[in-house]
Amino acid sequence: MTARRILPGLALLAALGTVILAGPRPAPSRAQELERELVANLSSGRVLIAVTKDAIVVGTTEVRSEAGAHPPAVILMGSKKIAILLGATEWVTPDSSVPPVRLDVEFPRIVNEASGTKHLGATEGANDLELMGIAFLERLRVVAGQLHRKVEFGPDEPLIEIVIVDYVDGYGPEVWDIRYRVAQDAMRGDFWRTRVLRPSYDQLYPPEKGQPKTLIEVRYPQEGAGPGVLDRLRQNDARLVSIGNSDPRMTQVVQALLNGQSPKLLGADTAAFLRAAMPAIADADSQLSLGVLYELKGMDWIIEPPTPQKAEDKARPPGAPTLRKKNNQ
Image 1 (spheres, rainbow, N blue to C red):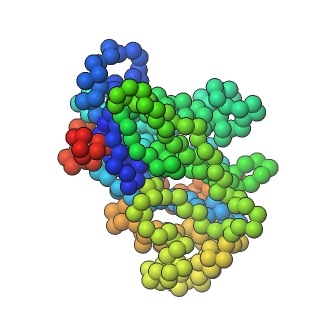
Image 2: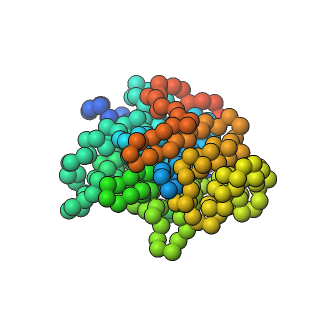
Image 3: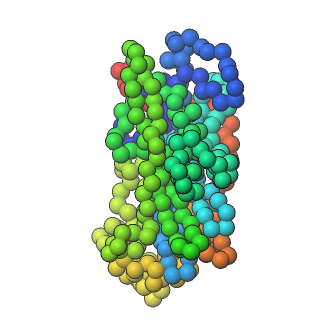
């Protein structure tokens, strides 16, 4: 299988049989299976989140880790909830009539269908977050289950990561990180069964008692991402220091973030700081998004995210990286 760096820093290899998405298809020979390759394009970049006194500020920056990569996929899930998808969101079989799979485009439908539905594998009394996680797992298993060569995954490296930002009635603001990891079983020869494991659910906000309430940053892929915004502030990064010194409100934002006191800030002030800071930490041509999520009036976009579009099936761009190890090419 060919893919654009599904996981950071790893020489991965995999092979794809026919991706069966729309109904039964004639099964190719095993030789044909191993020759057919799949391109997986990443949604990669940084997600920046600050929970403030009156709002949740959410920003994203694109990291073009490989040719064909996408910015983080930002999806509104109602007036009080946002989902940001990172990782292998687009799966393409070049030179094939099989349409590309855009998991970011499918995500709202999957979640809507999961609402009020008991999914196989969900625990008794499962909440909306688990129902959503299991419903997406079912779809992801169909796609990733077509990998039949050995792949080298780190123990904590996800295939796909979903950041959920929302207000919960009677509870308040929360941020979750849902991560989907992969395991493989040797079946025969060089034929492997690939399994997507049950997702992990990590609550990023509110933090554990006594932990700072500050800027949250999620990066995909981790390798080569460089220091985060808080690290840069602590290291007196000249560009961010200049922004912090440009206005008393910006100075207040910087100090509150460094002191773990983001709930003392106003959303508008925090968004103004991130609006100035994100271009300073991103590539010159990086696509950005920035919005302020208010509990009562919903999302106020400052920079609207690009709308995920269904990709046309296209040939693999020249020089796109492969998941095959060099000695298997």
